Image 1 (cartoon, helix red, strand yellow):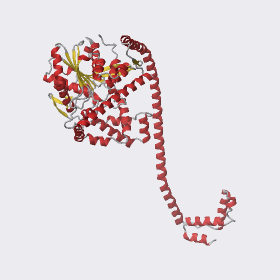
Image 2 (cartoon, rainbow, N blue to C red; image 1 turned 60 degrees about the vertical axis):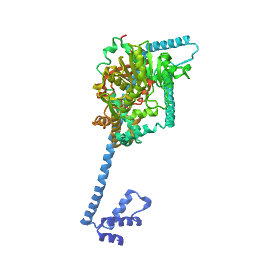
Image 3 (cartoon, rainbow, N blue to C red; image 1 turned 90 degrees about the horizontal axis):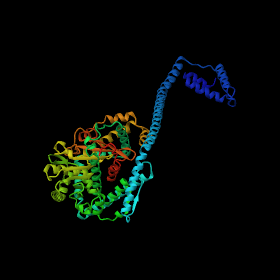
Image 4 (cartoon, rainbow, N blue to C red; image 1 turned 135 degrees about the vertical axis):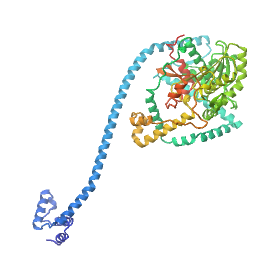
Length: 596
């Protein structure tokens, strides 16, 4: 027996014995031949070695070996078990996501099938309507060409979803609208720079953002994930939109009978007034979007001629025109016209069309106004517009007894028009009957009980327009919703899931829908920024029900506040606010069930 083997026997440690045995095997050619290393030869070598050199294992050595083997096993077992459990969990998640994806794709296929069937039925049902509409437009265009042969007209085909002409019309209209805003902004900025009039509004804006707390809330909300958060919120709101509240009566019976179509003709007419207040660029955009034609002869016209032509009046019927920016920021742009055919004196107030007017929109502290609280900046603007236009209006109404006073406007102009109507009613500034047609008015007044005659005010909302729901309270709630979704999405969802939902490749999970349903709006409003309402007896929501045709839903002020208090995030929430989009909705309003 070798010295190494003897020493291992004396140590009574089986690990030493195995180690020395391995050394002996590797160095003893009689017992181990590396060139013939089969399992049988190794076994024979071990047997031969055991017969010649006995293994002196004691119970103590075997116990030591057992403890070491069990220690290694106990150390390895949890790692193997945890790894196996994680693998099983990942497989379960993968299986669940695969099932959800399969269900989602099957639902999409089903929806695509239903959409194709509905589209086919709608196309068949609307084919006659489109033909009639095309014939009417062509006839009007031909009549204009015959009556005015020297004019040149460029006409698009009537808007039809899925055609390049519709996309072209929308693109040209948006280009003209944005171009007009840029030109108006440049003029106002230059005039303000010359007069140094912009510094004061900007200081007021900074003070408002700081005191209202919006600056801090915005800084906590806006980050690199904002686009994903907005997309998730929009998708959630779209799911809820399918089960939204609908009014019990789409429109009062008085609107459907006893001159129902007369009301809609008035609304369409005063929307064209509201568009005309923006100037020639917006007028051209509305002509392209709503009526599908562009009159080259209108380019370069005098503002009074362009406005008169768009509202179908003579230039001499416009008695006050204040639509060009001249550096005076004390009041909004407006004009006063008299419509002898319909016996109306109309005051039209322009909406937001310059950076300074955006500041007026945003700085939304409230102030006392006519027995209630109102948007401070718009209340101030309504008083200044009346100071400028009031004498002309009173004179025209005195000269034409029996004429009605109409106030109208779009966006910022609509909110100001509502407050000016309240001002006229409260102080009895005119004796003639007064009505207001507001298009996309934001919430500007409370309480509604303080409005002398709220039935005289009607507000219109187009499709997915966000401005009629815009206030400090609703903006705070929007930011709170975004932070809530951001917290859930980045703690409970993987990056891949967020990305797939953002791209629309994966439907919303029940977990994120439940999390959003548990979100609660602010219970308290900020001091000086209460939850205002739109001071209108009814809000008429113009909805695109069928391809290219609009229907309406009529809500009371209480219904709007109760069921639609928050901003609805939608890809078209800004484009649907433009004046040409409103004109298009009135041009394609479905009045089949409205009696003459």
